[in-house]
Structure formats: C-alpha cells, structure tokens
Amino acid sequence: MTFDEVLASIDGKGHGILPEGWGQGRALFGGLVGAVLFDHLEKSVACGRPLRSFSLSFVAPAVAGPVVLSSEVFREGKSVMQAMVTARQEDQVVAAMLVSLGAARDSSVCVAAPTLPKMKTPEESLRFPNIKGVTPDFLNHFDMRYGQGQPPYSGSDDASFCGYMGFCEPPQTMTTAALIALVDTWPPSVLSMLRTPAPASSLTWTMDLLDDPATRPADTLWRYQVETDQCSEGYGQSRACIWDAQGKPMALSRQTFTVFA
Image (cartoon, rainbow, N blue to C red; front, side, top):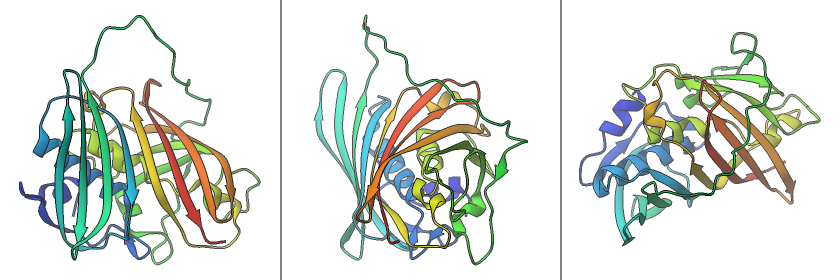
C-alpha cells in the first residue's frame, strides 16, 4: 500500500487495517503510526488550526492488522485547541498522541530557528542502504540520503548526522501527516556508533511545527540534522531540525529511544 492508501484505509469512525510491508522489526514503522494518528485527529476534529506541537508515546508495538482510533478534544480556546488521539489493537492502547493546534497571532517577538548546515548535495550524498531481509521493510517507501555522518552499524565515533528524506512515491499532496512519517524514517542516532546490528526503538517523540508542510511540493527532499544529547543505561535522547528544499526551518523534533547494546 502507498502512504495515501494507508491513510484512506481508516474510515470516518476510526476503524481500519494497518498494512503489511511497513514493518520495523516486530512492530509497524513508528512514523506511519504517528501519521495515521494525526491524520485521523485532523479529519475528525477538523478545527482548521495548524499543528503546533505533538507528543507521541509508543505504548506497545503496533502491528499489521485491525486498529481502532479515537480522538478527544480537551479544550478549545480562541486560538489554541488541545486534543488527544489514541490507537488500540485488541483492546490495548498501542500509541497515544497529545496535540496542540493553534491559529497564528500577531507578535513583536521573533527569534530565528536554527540555520541549515552545510552538507553535500543530494546527488553527492550516500543513499541509505536498502537490503532485503536486513533493513526494515518500511524503507522501501522512502528515499533517504546521508549528507554528513554514517548509517547504522558503521562503527562511527560520532552519533550525529544530517541528510535528505523524501518519498519514493510521493503522496498526492504534501500534508502534516506526511512530514510526520518522513521525520521518523531515520534510525536512532547512536546506531551509527555500533558495529553490529542491535535492537532499538523510539519510546517517546515530540515534534514542534514551525511552518505548514502543505505549502510545499509533495516530492520535496527535506533536509534533516540530528544531534545526540546523551545515551546511557540503554536510553538516549536526541534532537533534530528539519528544513525544506529552500533551507527554511520547518520543524524541531526530539526523541527518547531505547537501544539494547
């Protein structure tokens, strides 16, 4: 199934089937889970306000098969709405997303977001290796390239990298849900320091939107840079920035991840 087909498979009541072919180990690719959650919330709440921030908890492994989504509005003010959407499989919550949506307002305060770092061009960059039976299935749907730094299990001394990300088959239109899926394509940053494969997964994920992704082309190769803050006792934290093709900052992302190595 394509990305658009996955989103369209969820009906208006939140019932649907999560697809095969988007796996990441024993679970479904977390970026797709986040995209499905937000897309349902956006369609069911339909407040017209842009997403400002979300916090997503991966409560249990989401797997291919039936899923039930439900949205709830906590409070709706003049500018801001707070809401939550959850995904359940076999009556168990597998993911929960708390969102803040807010209309733009006039302000005299302006602080610039991080600027785009220097990196190789997309043509010069190292494409993320896609090896059947070794790399996750979901990578078949994405075009990922390392502009600086190394891929997982390369024994690098540095847990930071930057690169490009896009869809192999772009959605019909660019959406916030599509950007959510793209940002989570990258593996936990510390995996580049390992020399052999090891299990790892996202525990929590927060992303703040700085602009509306829907104003960009669906075939955009987005820029991405991640820095690792720390990793110890099997848990690590990283922060990332995302820019569009023209170098305008679009989002800030932060993850807590687990690594079993």
